[in-house]
Image 1: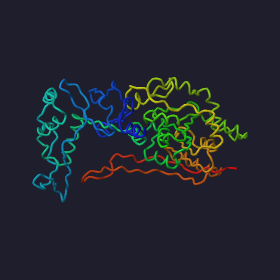
Image 2 (image 1 turned 90 degrees about the vertical axis):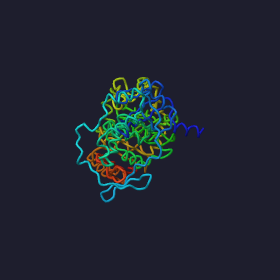
Image 3 (image 1 turned 180 degrees about the vertical axis):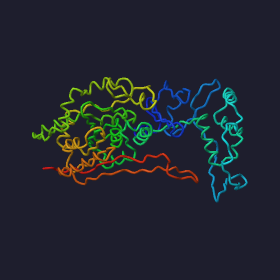
Length: 457
């Protein structure tokens, strides 16, 4: 049973979600695999049927059959080709069959880009395609008919080859949709959807909140469900993750991409903040909420609340977990993914028994990622729901809301060990003789306020 489950995680299956990485990150597509699903690359539509049953990490290449129909076939590297070249003292040294060859320094100063270096025309390329030529064969023909290819530096030759490969023989990598890959894809293509939450910031959030096995985590997730899915993935089917919300339930469509098992999905529940607070107040018989509290804001927004039953009925079609008025989903608005199979549902309404247990014992930790809500108002009302000495972590894109919240927590003596952390990440390009920081990397990852809740009595 365990072996079968592990094999299922390593190999794709019909109905699973995948992240398709086209041409080394040039395009990222979330798709749900089925025999009828298709992927558009350039102006060609190809079936995703060959991807079913393949291990994650498999690379496919777009080829054309004899009748001109495009299809994806597993990419097979040709032999042991070593393109690594060392540059020493202004000269370039390459390995050959007879030993090292040393040539004079080459540069691109004498090359003029006037579109006359290539003797192969577009009609010639189309003739090759009609005759069944593969993409690699077209690339080799372009190189052979280029008058300037041999005069370019080794770096320029590699860039030229890569550019033609992306056009005539694009490659598709099957990536497993986990917290890291999903966060990276959204941050690269649609960062606003996840509140500009970078992958290192997400990992730091989980670490500071001590998300571990058999924990009950209270989450305020207004970043599309990414935080909820990441917490559930780390819990691995133990404990609970309670997605709390203010007023109308927010979207949890990203959770559907995680390929979470039914056992893990059962551990993802929802409860409005008003229900959690009312349970807490009924036990204490001494409500402490003032006019600026979350409870007061909820009283003004009750007309906009949506029940769990309505959300469940509205999510019958596709992977969206939104109501009818918010039919935006990941396929249509963020990534050109595909509707093919029904997704696994997660986020049922928390039962009264579970809420009573949380009322008695408190949550193990609290994580907040709600850039559009007032941070101090949220933490002031949600912190009493935690057990004593429970950690909490709050993400925000800007510093000032967290600084204000930290100051108020110190004045109210509600927490200790308060600190604001700014994650810092530098991405490097690592290639032979050209290792350096990436030219277009993210310079900002938001801020995290963390601390430990103490008894206020």
